[in-house]
Length: 560
Image 1 (cartoon, helix red, strand yellow):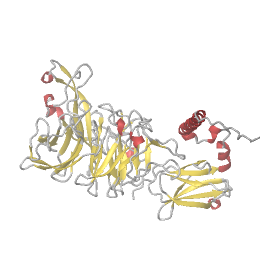
Image 2 (cartoon, helix red, strand yellow; image 1 turned 135 degrees about the vertical axis):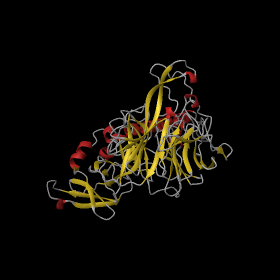
Image 3 (cartoon, helix red, strand yellow; image 1 turned 120 degrees about the vertical axis):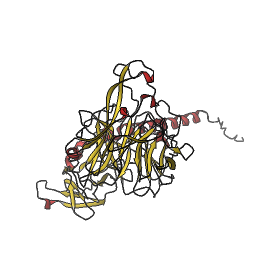
Image 4 (spheres, one colour; image 1 turned 30 degrees about the horizontal axis):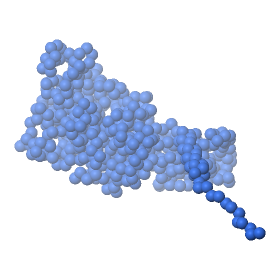
């Protein structure tokens, strides 16, 4: 197990880096929440916690589940968008429960991954301004250029592959403008992580023409509006030392000689060099992302098929292709379609998992789906309502699954709050800790005493991000929780809490104070709804009473 403090990631890698009783996330039970999908919980449904109120965590809706999904790995995503408070790097377990989440100086976050450098595993992600040409953090491009958000891959040799966007000026006559104007050029750089020097560089403008693009220039190329004609969004390096890159607006993949920089071949788009053995379905991908080698003759990619201008021209799919470089032919091995026919208008990811499954992240649409290798849908999950897909209110550039072990340097967070039965409970959680097996509630009457003064009061298995213990009247004044590894040793303890002071602080003095403050809007809505229902019932009773049939009673005649 690699134990790393969460802060140490910043120094080494950085393009980027360094419960049961709260309101838990929705379990992976395969049910469908109609209200969730119709925006009943708002555009960004959240899980809230009593011990860690500052955390913003997406609430999941699991539309389909299967035991065949990869449950030994964690799900990594970077929720952001117009409905989010702050972009987050987030790790969830196979039940959808939080493992770790964090913002990064209020910056946009992309591409959360687990990568290996010099034998140790690190979390990496891109942080910065997400406009084209945004700046990276920590690891930077060479020659004074800016590292871009689209890709960052650490190679086994200790280098990093990064995308770079920078503005050049070109003659625009071939795309209908009679002047020289600004154009976004796309660059591959391979950077030595120790020295920061580039060991390889390739520029799209040296090998591609503007007219090869499927993106119309429109008002671009004027003033400071650079024309984004190529739009590189992934780089992969194979065992032969060559590079595979994806161009969104060329609808193609370019395979590049790692020594000379010359183009070896092009797959897809206007300059396609391959014969399609699958009736056109192997080469008609468009606006694609995340192209990777999967073996020496297989390529995987996320085929958006659409963009924000052409939203309905195709159905988004995952695509696995077999390439024969000798005969220059290509064929479809498998296609992966979301059962709801999501149109991923931007971003997206394709990951081949260790067990053979395939994971697709739908980028601009807040969803990820796991498939069997042959394309059968196994698990389908939303982290935002389907009715808002395509609005960019909640999105994640990519969604991946990885093994990860985290041991934070912080202490567990804890709080004493009212539970759902309105009695007091002690809540504890630990943002980033993956090795906690059990929680032990401890108590002491003397805060200044030694550790020997702390006695075990209760224990429970860790079942989710937040764990709650109901407080009994016989418990001592001070409480804390100890996190325990499955091998029995202690990992950390929370700060002691004075039960008496906490209860006085939160003791209700009015109806509003008695309610759970974190859920006050919800509870007020429930009270209002209940009042309306009672009013309707009373009104119906009154109407029924007023409309009752009239009965006249007459005393019997008493014979004289």
